[in-house]
Image 1 (tube, rainbow, N blue to C red):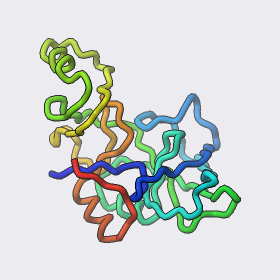
Image 2: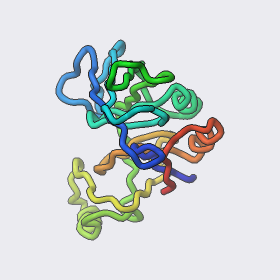
Image 3: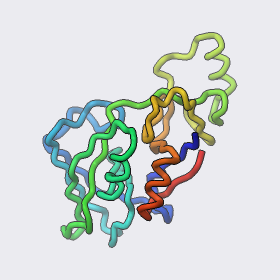
Image 4: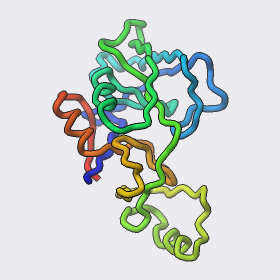
Length: 193
């Protein structure tokens, strides 16, 4: 199976950001892979001033939250995911609502499918040595990933997921999601791994 990185930058390589508020407020800080968002949460985003037109179907904010357009939600709902969708009221800096519907997406767990042997990352020799000696701490996070590879048999058959045991922001998607998104002409930044 082919896997792809769904990059948090838009298709032009630009960042989309804004001030995110969740009501009711969450305990601590927002994080993918943790059960922190409750049903009925109201999500509001005020985009940064330089953003004049939101035309991306997927973006990430510095809060650590990912957002998808209504069209991207439709694509994702046709595939095997663990995504929770929350309506998001997204406005430009001046208070005008963006065109179209957007959703905060949240996943309460990450998938431990990182391929330690075929990926390229900082400290690989040391980590492989610790794995061979069964000395790698269960909470160790790989850093400095230059090439991401996932173990297909450990992805739980998911078509959209976040990889555990690695410091990595972007989700991974399967080729079937990519093909569906392309058929809908979605504006995404996708890179094959």
